[in-house]
Image 1 (cartoon, helix red, strand yellow):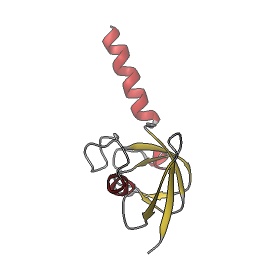
Image 2: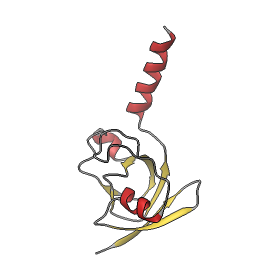
Image 3: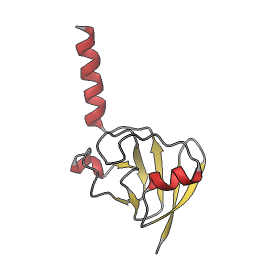
Image 4: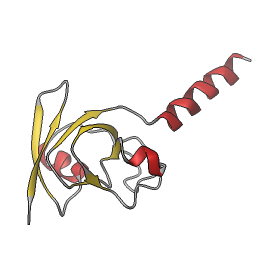
Length: 107
């Protein structure tokens, strides 16, 4: 079993995560305040931008194929290398939805 280092920018937090466990599960065990909700890869609350490294996340249904290259859903993502993540960063599809909702509220 291979372990990888996952670093979170802006917080200085760093954890070791096995290739067999999700990033979120290790965050919870280590007491790191990682947002989450559904834990099934749909709500995007646990989203993080991948600044470096790779993850495996076949069940991240809330992301498009293109978004899976740049974003991790920590509830589904398992490290495939050492990682640098920026937590709380959401893919363009959800950012666009939020902007559309704000515009609709203004009408």
